[in-house]
Image (cartoon, rainbow, N blue to C red; front, side, top):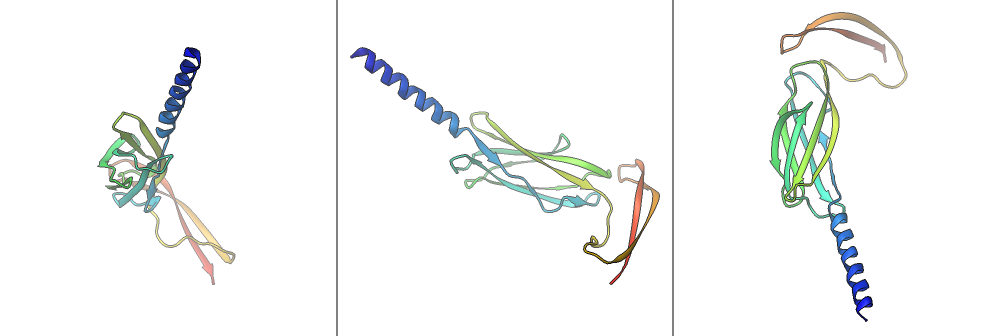
Length: 158
């Protein structure tokens, strides 16, 4: 009888342990209002932090752009977080990451790419007669560095 009781206690303990580990699995979403911006443009980042069972992860969301912290936000009761920041002052691709840490110290992350590049006008799509003229130019970033970029001028007949 004692052996059956011991086996039952062990089985219940294993079930409780597996449930507590399953509750720690979660997802953090990350959305940017634009993935291609000019220097110093305002970028809005937002998302949700939820456990695999759908409940909100209560904790703090920290957003970084290439390892530079831009903001910290307390995740609300529905799991929503948001952050508004200025784009960096150099033309290049940046990794934007968010890390949500809950009360027990578990962290959940996600990342995406933000391209800082001067651009103007709509992107050309579809089929039509067009000519693309490319010219290398020097450009000075807002941080003072000078880079060579390719300027593309597209003309098309509608």
